[in-house]
Image (cartoon, rainbow, N blue to C red; front, side, top):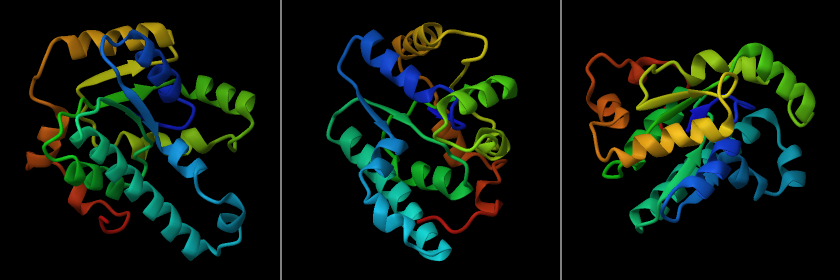
Length: 189
């Protein structure tokens, strides 16, 4: 699942673990970041912090891919706010059946959630909307400002129950119209 901060990805993931008929693991980028030494991270200068965050996210992609390649079913939640992140996922998840779900939420609701959470600066989600959804191709999209978490989970489960179709990740990898390789944001890992 891809969506901005506070859009409801983790809540949907937790509901999916209940709703899906076979075992799944929820792997979120925030979970991986929480494993890192926070004290030492805050002591880094801007360049070193950028490197650590890039390495963390690249490692997250590879951890998800490794779990999937070992035969596990994964619900991944991520914020693909830099073009290299999607390019890297497309590369490391080659050969994995990825269902790409876009998680949307209205700007007013995102602001309300950020104020309520108090663990992220208000405005973070608003600044992420355009880059997170820049690629514009998903297998399925849900909106947590118009549907409940349970309804979003049910839509995803129904989609998964339909079986294998041509996937957005396949289209993004092969589409001559995609400009992912030309967007700014740094080189892929």
